[in-house]
Length: 144
Image (cartoon, rainbow, N blue to C red; front, side, top):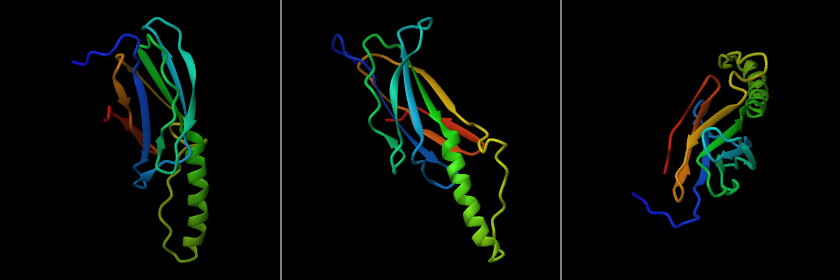
């Protein structure tokens, strides 16, 4: 069991892997919120976006007393951009008669337009929370 110094806070990092293509998801906006107890109000702390490696390395620090954290991943814009790129590739592939099947991902371009992950934290611990994402599902876990 970790014995954290008085006043230390938990820290959070994340990354996103698009499992439909086996590559990092670049440019996904992420917002970070925290609260200091199950009944407390959420406080927006800020956010960032994933880099070319799918990582978000500059999330804001958590305030002292944080017990719960929420990461909000804005996936719709990512999937719309990806869908537009796929449409361009399909037009080129159609001319070659080998276009891949294109499944409709819904009227907004994303079945999950956002993903919100809420988890409990302990002061002094680091929490790496990867998101494995595809157009029709997602999975998260506590990484290292």
